[in-house]
Image (tube, rainbow, N blue to C red; front, side):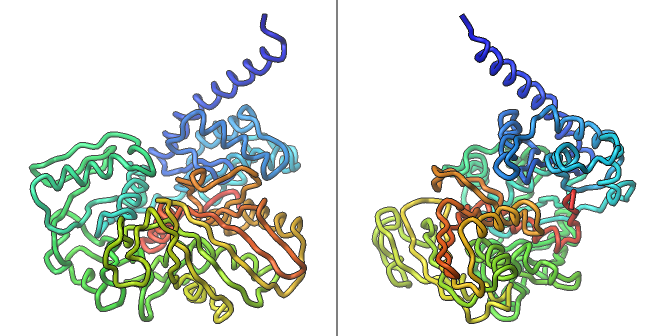
Length: 480
């Protein structure tokens, strides 16, 4: 016989699942028809399953100490769906919690509250989308494609129009499509992919992506494919200076270039959330820095602003990459020729020095090194820092939790209080870095912080944020 406790739990779960299933079509329609991305405490809900929607609400307790019920957030989603709004990222979790638990209502109805909170994006003209070309289609290129296709539709701010790869043999197109469709780390593509062999194109979830075969930028005329004023995202790592990357700008139809690797020379190195305001409309070539620089710089900025950083060392425990050998073989770099899947490999990283390009106040204060380990994805940065002020574990973690939730770095810094989290749990994280609060060490003014990061997917999300600023289609995140 079913107990009252069991019945209560079952009914509660059925209610949550019902609300999540009702939310799905509203969330999808808001994005497809208006370019509005719905989130709950930073967790994006576009294309989320009912279970993922339920879990996003459950995560609110981690930040607030009180859970948010789906029946509490649903009226806010309904109110948004009835408004005429421009593109934005709207956090219904924060709206609902503020209204219900932080006394923000002030006698207003849900509809009146939502209207006031979202007034800045009401009745505005939509921005024109921008053509994007991915030059190179390796690990980062394919994840960028997934992210862009995920947000495709009539109101998409960035339209993936083409990918450029070296001239291939028979079957190359099918191989490229297959690599996009299946990924050993990130799982299968969420949708449908077909190949148009006659026109050398990949069709994915409504996106028609031209595949251009070329051995150098000089061979390409993008306007021949109907592509104009395009942002070229160079994922090859072949060219890292202004002269090399400038080749892209000589192509008809190309307007700007974004590099997804550390740049050389005077090219701006951008860590989104830290110095993205340095991206100016007239900038033609910009660099999105490295995955590790993106992972650590937001947290370092937050710490420096609050406590001041005297000096420190950054040790990166980094998953192996395609740059290493599968088995022992020649490599021009020290140690990297040894089998990546069998060894921990000490190597150098420029990430600590590169931090100062985005955060000049830390110039000369950090050293860094890296250990490549036998895992295929997700890395860990260990920040061993001497601060200007003394602190405690409780104060430091509380500050980082609030930073992850309420600051301008909330899209870059995530926070976990789990005592069981390991690297595979962070595959697919959309944040630049995730602070592991349970590993935090504090001794007066000396601290050790552990910051996880998906060095593929989290970095790709940072790149897309840079792309929006370069293409001048960035939208606000609300509530502020």
